[in-house]
Length: 99
Image (cartoon, rainbow, N blue to C red):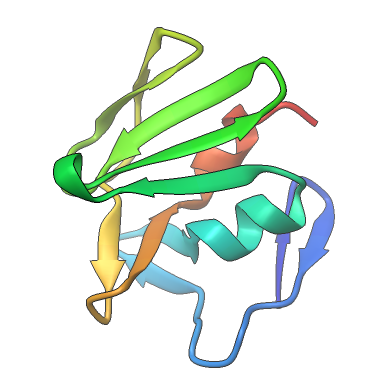
């Protein structure tokens, strides 16, 4: 279990919260959907769109740069594919999402 923005998140079987060189990493889809966001994987660009109403964030596997509502976002560390299939992002990413 992880706590994000004051919300307790139950991780699915096989999901973990882990440290990546001092940066806490969490599974994107599980956390974002629990917080009420839609998550869309774009295979061609290896990117992910997290949205809710007028809010939209786009991040990409392997790069620290992304965007929120067409403004530049710089993450602590790049999102990764954990175990080859689950996108993990820095926990601090979720602080950028509206409550």
